[in-house]
Amino acid sequence: MAADEFVVNCSKKRRVEEPEFPTNRCVICGAQFSAKNPATTPDQTKLQSLLTACSERKDEVGLILLAKQSSILDGSVTIRHHRHCRSTYTSKLHLKRNAD
Image (cartoon, rainbow, N blue to C red; front, side, top):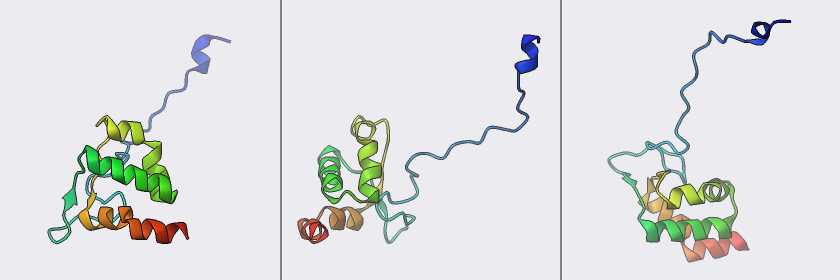
């Protein structure tokens, strides 16, 4: 058999992959941003508290964010969220309630 017999030509166009964390949706609740509920991009301090809450909660959102923790912290992956969502997600009261 000749080597060219093993070459597979793909006529389908490659699908453009979605960004890991869409910039038009909150990483916590998944809802789109609006004028009433705008996007916030966290600074390093807020990122640290969010990731700490993720490791305490161990829920779906937390596990997804923790899987990309190093990329998020070094800035190669950008996340955005609603201010209220982050506040609720990282709240000590909610974290305690989630642990019970």
